[in-house]
Length: 396
Image 1 (cartoon, one colour):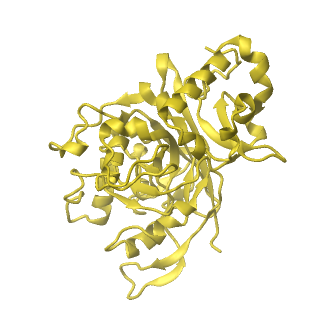
Image 2 (cartoon, one colour; image 1 turned 180 degrees about the vertical axis):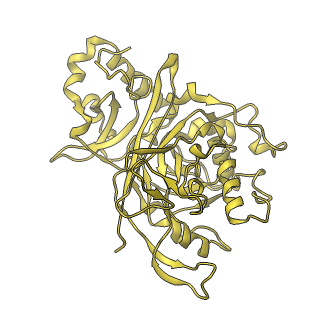
Image 3 (spheres, one colour; image 1 turned 120 degrees about the horizontal axis):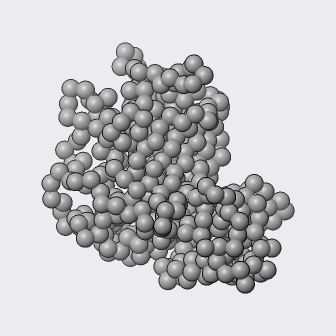
């Protein structure tokens, strides 16, 4: 319940309250919370300087008890009309603010946790072999990405250049990627650090993870295919990773929790999540130049974010406030549920038809990609994630 007049279809209701960092003309970036089509200025509404730092990191570092206390207070402020006079002056229209990167990203790890995506790529790239590598159903595969090129939604996507070598070529060439792709993903933001040498168990997932956001892990497939053996992704991924401006608190996703799909075999103990399942019923939507081309289902992911975090720290690697780890491309069993163009066009062999009569295999200069998502909330409500948007610019 709230005294605010909210749009009927809002995903930013009082059960959500996602955090972001915003500014207005002539002011410094500060923390805000989305409610309907407005932003509540937390620094002004709470008089707590932690919300005036220009990043969520200092607040996240206070830990779960502080997160819960602020969430409870916010729901009280917007739920009880007695607070209207104090709160309303600090509500700003979303279309009047500029959004910034919500966290100072410490480390960035990207996983490869959708079975449907991994099997599709296996069939595309290794048609005569097994779709999955032998380790895939035993552990969450991932790679350590480049934190410095994680940027907020709206950042232009400059077509990257690098080495690429087609199978028919004798030697590699250097130039702009000809196979620029998207990867529709969900990211998770670490709030509480951990101690070096001490793994984080599955049950401690909500003690460390502050919330979730949307991620587009842009990929240059031709650069990637030439460089990835033997050490994996590098320049084909590191040029840009886009994230949504709003971080949905983990507490807002409790109603979206589901059991993950059945596993192929018993898991080693640190990954056995029978008593701590963290599958999430999140539906993503991918639009290309405004046209919906895919609706990937996050609930079908084989490896959950809790298992990803447990594996990330299984060797004793320490977490830091601001760490971001992403799910990897989210894809479902149907063609309209695939979260990348390499799958939607089957590596260019089956061009994707668009409503204007054109087709796509991979992205063209000028294309605009928008990823949005929602999840079930309490009592029939919906939890929105906002959008992560990027427009492709020609190579420089």
